Amino acid sequence: MYEDFLVRTDSLENVVENGETTGFKFAVRNANYRGIFLSLVTSFYVEMDGEEFPIDDIRFAVNGAAPRSMEELKKAVFEHWDMQDEAYLYVKKPGGLEKGTHRLGYMPGTIDGYGYKATDAEWVDNPPQPGKGGGKTYHVCNFTLELN
Amino acid sequence: MIKRGVSLYSYQQAEFFHQMTWKDELREVATNLNGADGIEIISETTVPRYPMPPESFYFEWNNEMARYGLKAVTYDAFMDTLQFRDHVMTIAECAERLKYDLRIAHKMGFENMRLIKGVPIQAVELALPLAEELNVRMTSEVHSPQALHAVPGTWGESIGRDIAFIEKTGTKHYGLQPDFGIFQIAPEKPLVAYQLRVSAGLSKEESFKVADELLAIYDEIGYKDKELLYAKAEPVAPSLFVKRPSPMGGGLRCAADHLFSGPTADILELYNVMQYIFCIHGKFYDMTEVEGEPGHFEDKGIQYKEAIAILNACSYDGYINSEFEGQRSQQDMGYEGLVDEVEQVRRHHEMMDRFINDHSKDMTI
Image (cartoon, rainbow over all chains, first blue to last red; front, side):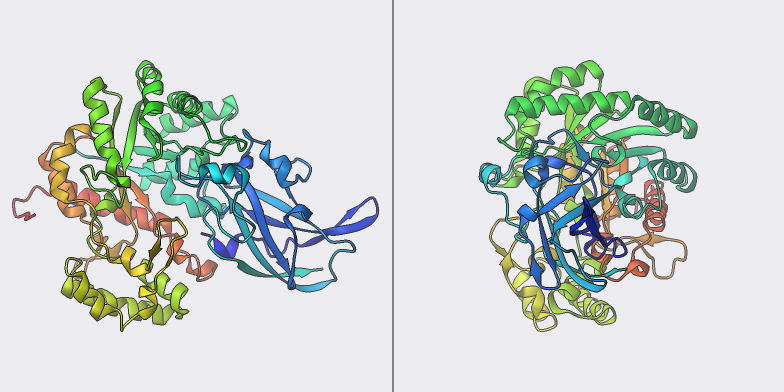
């Protein structure tokens, strides 16, 4: 759901840390009609201009906290991503992106659900890989972003 | 007398786009729905910073509800069994989460708390003493593709489990919450058109044109002779009959299997379970104007008239809460193409009000 509205298309920026451009970031929304615990956010598929980024190079920033890796999100078992709130994805790319138009393929992966289900035990250790499902987004969503 | 309310789930898209807050939604229900006064919420949408909202939220909530004279009917609780991430939630942990939600629901003044289907009865049993102490009644949803009787070995088994539990314990704090989606007698046009755009890449105009053709075939044949229905419909829209792995699991299915399934419950079965019903989800997808009756609206796909006639006949005096779910099938046509949830809910209440007050004897079921 909300496939065409999951990424804010005027939110793309390069990330500068200690004077060095380390990557880029953009704003995303929770693809759900409810908020979910951060521990249920397990993956993001991010492909920018044809380059796919490994999940270890992606961090997630919400609730005013510093960007967190997927391993750190696992421990946030009582902290919520409210459905009305925007979060930022930080993607590692030394040197960042060039100014101009960029094409993004994006798909969130979450393991929220409706009670006990057959995949529960498997997903403790092996949640769906980025771009392979989970949550209420069933395909990669495409966006055109402008970096000013 | 049947009472009318709204699940704020109906306004989910307006919340997503920051067009309405829960306060706007309460005002809308209280002022524009011709006497509706019931409110149902999705816990993890309406409660800010769930599961630990600031105390000021409870004050604001109860203040706004009192301001408009609204009744807190049902709090919809969820259960994410992988919340703790390093293990599957135990039954005891599941019960603790139910109890936590019962306390929030109680502080917000709710009469009922809806549980989702995947909550085991053992967890319900552990939470029941607190539900009785707080006087918050837990409900088990009866949702499509369930029937109103137990179907052993399937997802639809739970209603048998629920009724056995109620009978065994004699509790007045566990009951049923049917969702009118089980009475889906015909496909909804926006959902058919959406599937055509997704599966065959049709334009908006084409998708509604082909949907009209398919609905005409369905009107003529119905859902019972599936072979004939599929034989006539497949040449019109082959893409709906391509079997794919379901994202929800459970093997290969085609879109037509879902769209053309017919009702999953027999409407007359309402009589058998009436005594267990605490509240009802008035599921709907598409309220359109009744032909030749300006200002009157209907959802052509769901057996509202018949269901409300039976509820009237049984003197059901609980709530039917609007649960609009037509948003998702209309979010691929740009911002301008989004459906107007507020208008849809207003139309839904025009229809329900009219059916509830229709005591004519010409009803044939």
